[in-house]
View 1 (cartoon, rainbow, N blue to C red):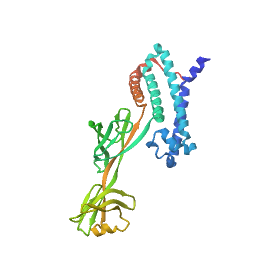
View 2: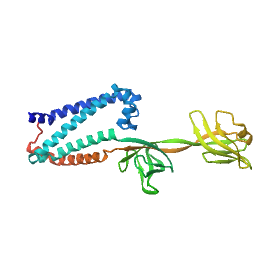
View 3: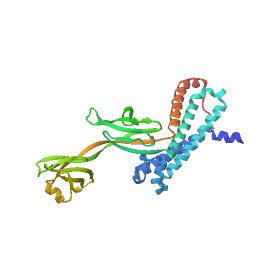
View 4: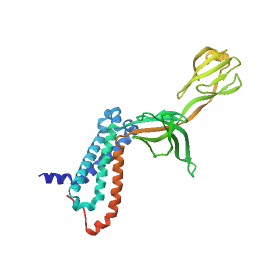
Amino acid sequence: MFTRIWSWFCSLKVAIVLASLATAIAIAGSLLMQFNPQVFAGLDNYSFLDWQRSFGHKAPLLSSWFYLTGVMVLLLAANTLCCFIDWLLRFRSRWRKTGEYLIHLGFVLVVIAYFWGSFAGDRAHLSLRTGEVQPLPTQPGYFLRLDSIAPVIGTSGRPIDLLHNISVLHGDSIISSTTLHANTPLFINDATIVASGSDQQIIGFNVILPDLGYAADLTPGAIIRLNETTDLRVNAIHSDANNAYVNLTLFIAGETVWQGWYSSQQPVAAPLRQAGFNPIIRRPLLLATSELTINHDPGLRIASIGSILLTLGVVVALFSFYAKRRRGDRPEIR
């Protein structure tokens, strides 16, 4: 009885059925994703568990295909593991199939690593300005600094890549400097850093001051001399789609006489106007930012081992293929 059950668990027919079901469900689910962006659009920005808590539980029917596919893949991994164990028990007579069963073991480890990372891992996002230093999430004592961003222009004149030049600091010391390409991750311990894109942030405004006859840049920390005794300090900048806001402090002879917000859609406050500050905004001042995704994946090492075994198994299977063909060695379909 046990032998029959074990043979069924190791059956190649069962593996084919499970793989076919997993593929069919995943294809149907991918179609659901295209027509339901309100549920699935942010999937890449979260671990699976975080996505389920934020979005998936709100649409249980739409997200159920994830669980069905997961169950099929887990059953397929269990079937593959049974085949590997069965091979180990008969290693003396079946050692020539080492390549295939290394692939089996590698697949099982990759599946375990994927589920471990999906439920125990997390993702964070960093937006780095040029020259800015920020701590690396999940890695105490490590920091990232963006040194520069440079597009790579192809022969057609269009950008084909975006280079993010990053320095990694541990405490106050730079331990490495690297360039992140598209789909080229940086590994720091169990954190995987991927350049997900770039953006531009408004850091200030270039304005004309017609009453004073010159232009000035309004950026946080800037001090604008309005006359011999009057200075204007820029404290903070904020903007939205329709308005620009600048927090200002007006000094006369070193004394604060006014502090508040200037809005491009509102009249200029009387103290500012009297001091000659009647700005006309020419353009925003933009600074490129690097958008980074930080993945903390506890299954990373297991996935790496699985990948090595998969590659090694393919190489061994490739060299042993013709030898087995000459022997007439074919898999038994049960």
